[in-house]
Structure formats: structure tokens, C-alpha cells
View 1 (tube, rainbow, N blue to C red):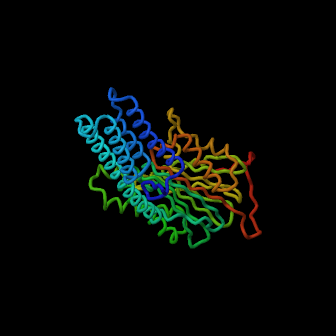
View 2: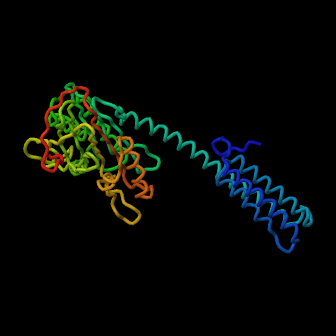
View 3: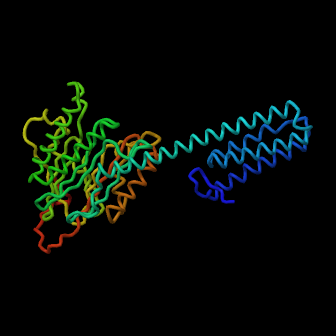
Amino acid sequence: MRLRDIRGERLPEHRRGLLAIALALIVAIAVVDIGIGTSVHLGPLLVIAPTLTASFAGPRLTALVGALAEAALLIIAIFHGGLTTTNHVAQLIALAVLSALVVFVCYVRERHARELSRLRSVAEMAQRALLRPPPRRIGPLRVAWLYLAAEDEAQIGGDLLAVARADHPCTPVLIGDVRGHGLASVDEASAAMGAFRECAHRYGSLPELVAAVEESVSRHQEEVVTTAHDADEHFITAVMIDIPDQGPQAEMLNCGHPPPLLIRDGRVTVLHSRRPAPPLGLRALSVGSDRTDRFTFEPGDMLMLYTDGVIEARSPTGSFYPLADRVASFQASSPDALLHEIHRDLLVHTGEQLTDDAAFLIIERTPSRHPHRPHLVSQADGSPSL
């Protein structure tokens, strides 16, 4: 007989072992109860078998094991004076009722599992529609990304990331984090990413792009925010970077977000902004024009952008995740390899218990197809400068 689990698939080896244990318990309890006579009644222990089966199988298999337990109790009753004694009748009824309850609980669990599977499928479709995963190659760049949702049944929250191509030969990049959680944060993240993708093709400078996204975010907040106090609670921390196809100089504008990491020849540099701007949605409070920070991004360099859910991830002992130190300890040769190392290490650090959404975006500049390359003048220590 081909035994199947709650999804209708054949039971794996370890579950077949558990089923064998449940059946062995039925036989062992029946044999011992018959052997010791009527002084001790072990029949009620037969309910253990269907209860154990319900922990790894579906309602049908659980009901079958419950029926076998009931049959074993009938055999015990026959050997101990027949089916008409009050004690045996009570035991048979109690076992039948308890087995039925176990099967019902198993059915409810299976139904919930199917509903959860459908919800996850819808969430994955929403994630693909909202995040619109960046291509693995865009211009002279290789891209890898990862989104980790803190909610077990969710696939997307308030973190956002996007990569676009401008009309002039460059690649604007965005990563951000909406304050708050729930559907409202998903709505704001979607609005910000949509504005970024639309504006990236139309604006020639990074400050103009940031200002356009800010205008769109503020307009969206005016539509959903109902009170003046509530308006102060809605904002998006973000980093936008403009990476030209030619030349090593990239631009960054940081709007209250954790600083990116630049990885070059195994060395990690934290790209702190000298001119940080307020988060999106609060930039009306700032005075003066935006000024970008420049840094060198050469072929072979990798740029890691992330959200605060990464660096604020705590271990079971309460220590924060030391992202820069951990990145420096890895010898990854590509964005995908580095992302794999960080993902595995972060889950080990937190015990696989994230308390906030976390997003990564890793970009590597590949050698230009054009042989000409402008002469570079580095600092005395060879490190990149903002």
C-alpha cells in the first residue's frame, strides 16, 4: 500500500518510520493488556496511536490508524469478558470519540495548510509584481538581490529596491525602507518604486530624480494620511545611486538610510554621506539644495545596499549583526556568491528568527567593453573617497 501524507504525496522514509511506531504501539498495548489480565486496563492508551499519526499524516491515514486502534480494543474486550461489560463499552466509546476529535483536528490543519499555500502563492505573485526583480545584468553591472520578510506568511513588507536604466548611459539604483509595517507600508513602498521607475528615464541628474520621487511620495501621502500628526509618522529612508556606464565616478544621495558598503579587493569601505538628506516624505523640512556624494566604483568592485533590518538583526543573546565585519571575512567572487554567504550567515546569527524585514541589493561593475579608460588618481592609501 502506498502511504500518503496530508498533501497526497507518498510518505517519506522518516514518516513511514513514525507510522510503523504507531502501529507497533497498537500491537504492543493489545498484547500486554491481554497478557496481564483484567486487573489493569491499558486499552485507553491506544489513543496514542492516532494522535501520533496526526502529527505527520493527513486525516485519512489518521482515521485508518484510529480504526485499527478501535479494532484492537474490541479484541481486548473479547478476551476480557465480552463486549457487554460497562467498562469495555465506555472504553470503546471514549476511544472512538477521541479518535474522531483527532481526525477533525487533522482535517482543520490540512485545510489551513492548503489555504496558507494559496496565500503564499498570491504573496509571491504580489512580490514579483511590486518589486519587479532587477535583471541579473544591466548595462556594465551584475546584480543580485534578496528580500527576507519577517512575517512567516508574508513575502513582502515595507522594504523596497529597484534598478532602472536612464536615457543617458547610466543606471540609477534605489533601496529604501518605509516606516511601519503592514499593508500601509506595502502601499507606500509600491508608490515609491513606481515613481522611481517612471522618473529614472526622464531626469538627467540624481538630485532631480530624488526631488521627483520625493514629490510623488509626498503627493501619495497627502492622499492616504488623514491628520497632521499622522503625516509626521509617514516617511521612507532611502539611498539613491547613479552609476554611469563609462568612468569610475558614481554619485550617491542618502536620505536617512544606512550607508552602503563598497567591497574592493577584499576590503570593505562604509560609504558614509557627508551631506545626508531627510527621508522621503520629510524633505520639506530641509533647507537648501541637495548635494550628492561621489565615490569611485571601478571594474571588479562590488556595492552592497541593504535595509536596517539587516544591521539591527539580533542574535539570541541580543547582539546586532556586524554586517561590515562579516562581509570583510567572506571571499566571494560574485554578487550571487556574496549574497549566499550573507544570507546563510544572517540566519545563523539570528537563529532564523528575523524581527524585521531585510533586503539586500549587491551590484558589481564589470570591465567596460570599450578599451579606453580614463586615468585615475587615487588617495595615498588607495582607498575610495567620498
